[in-house]
Length: 405
Image (cartoon, rainbow, N blue to C red; front, side):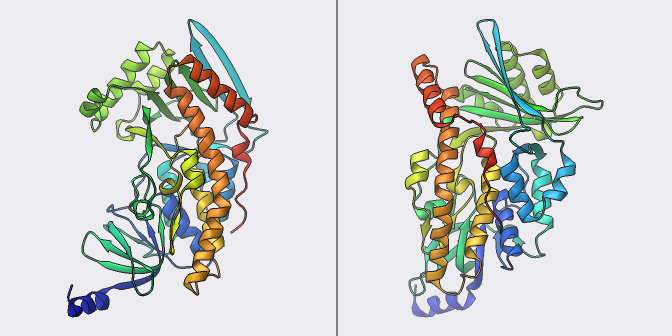
């Protein structure tokens, strides 16, 4: 580029103190946490409106602590009933084994519609915080200031003091940091919502039923609405035919449940589901050792949420962990935006505080996912031994407190 062209680009470059890439749960929560600390930020969201992809999200005590710090907990509690417990069922060789645990000793647990959560976060943000149709395609460091320069798909160029990547598992910001691509379990997930005109009559508890490498489960949101999921290893050839057709996804899910002889009520729930709520996704994760050793900062650029620690859904902690990230990151940045050095110190503090929490979550999720993923009895035994040794209290992750803003 010529000197004149370079000067023109610099003149047209917009300056923003904090840019957040991605307007999902993590991006909205991060912007809201910063706002509550008196810090202005701008979310760049590639979609045309606030996205609420996915059906529902489980939120346990650690997530509610984060939501209360964000100031939206009281808005969301009336939208879903408190869960009483979780029931695990194993079906094997005609035998049925059940184990249950109460949530009363753990604390508050509810399943929220993802759209309710996203709207609550977005509604508490100042007007103009979210810029839609704004897709980041590349990032570079300014050779003079070392602050990040963002290149958008529409040709816009932005220089930010701080760039926070909340842009999910396929993160452009993660690529800039040199993070390794996420991995996938061989199982895939179908998720959906089913609403009953009359009460569904099921206990207000989470249910997970497993037969071999297939798991079906669900959680009531209230007396009429159920969130359900099905995890299974489908043939990749078949997936290409159904991936974007809700009716075919529903048909495939029903056939799988019938083939593997799951209880009739699980099949009926899928038959009655809202087709618009259906999704079919790979179960993605970042391995525990990558979370332990990953470089999550370059200059004043960092990541949060799935861009940092995408994990399978087995603990119901992906969304809550992202909201924890938001609270901790805003707390660390508060009062430290004056110089590049102070910003870098604040980001290092954030990463240090989050890393071991995320390593333990990722390890537990990885072991549960691997148990479902393998057909080897020997591997299953070893995994169960590791889980018993490392996670004697399998619900301890829900008692974590990310602290105050």
